[in-house]
Image (cartoon, rainbow, N blue to C red; front, side, top):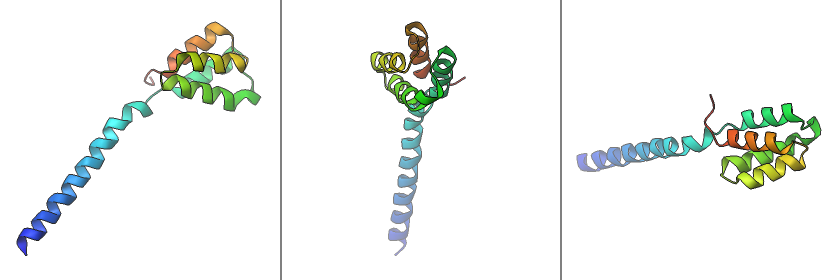
Length: 95
């Protein structure tokens, strides 16, 4: 009986460790700076009606799709240079 309790405790501890490490490994992707990208795009000319398009474009920048991000921002009214800078911000960790 004691062996089964020890085994269950070990399995639960292993599961907790796996969940904790899994969250830690996923954390860097969550640290991308979408708000900075959206803010820069807004300052450069994307209006309030394009907010969803800007957020979607900045999300593409997070995943490494720089060209898709820039294309999405320019389509939303952000000038090319500002769109490029905003997309580069999206891929960086927040400050």
